[in-house]
Amino acid sequence: MATVILVRHGRTAANATGVLAGWTPGVVLDEKGRDQVVATAARLAVVPLTAVVTSPLERTRETADAILAGRDPLPPLHVDERVGECRYGDWTNQPLKNLAKEPLWKVVQSHPSAAVFPGEEGESLADMSARAVASVRDWNTRLATPANPDPTYVVVSHGDVIKAIVADALGMHLDTFQRITIDPASVTVIRYTDLRPFVLRSNDTGGDLSGLVSKPATKRRSRRASSDAAVGGGAGS
Image 1 (cartoon, rainbow, N blue to C red):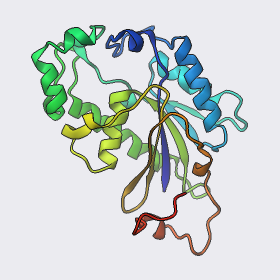
Image 2: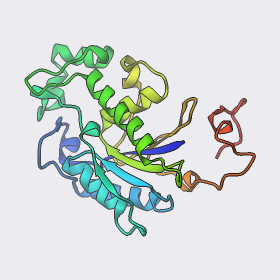
Image 3: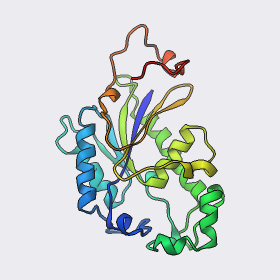
């Protein structure tokens, strides 16, 4: 049973000015973004981590470095292009206010599973979703060991990528993923069990995360029981 903590990178100048950065090199956190990730790292400090997985882009690497800073023991860092930003093709580096006038914008908003971004480097949102979900499922398996069958790890990624992973965990069609909001430096938590994923937190920008610390297993807390939903809602973590 893996617990995945999805962290969006902190704010960048592109975010602040409404520009779609995509895979543009050199896009780093601005001053507010650096403050955001330091605060998020402090919130996560109480949670022991098996690993940190990050998109290869600078803004996510900076965020991952902040999360790792000062940890003892230091969990391994893995760079995975599968959780990298969607490849927006010719839309890259364009102001969102201009892109909103494009016919494709309406497809992205209302029928994202059919959206394919223009240009040689353009990717479909469906392909982005598939690779991101596959990455999380892969890391769930790779990080689980006989000594640590229930890993808790961080994935540092991007807004649309995290939205796609959350939509999959909720059993939502990709066409509804625009209903999900993922802010800079926010924390979203999904616990994967044998039966189903549970979305424990979404777009959390300030809550106490100590509830994510794993409790020792007991005879009453079997792996099978952990896959069951609490009928009536339960008492909370």
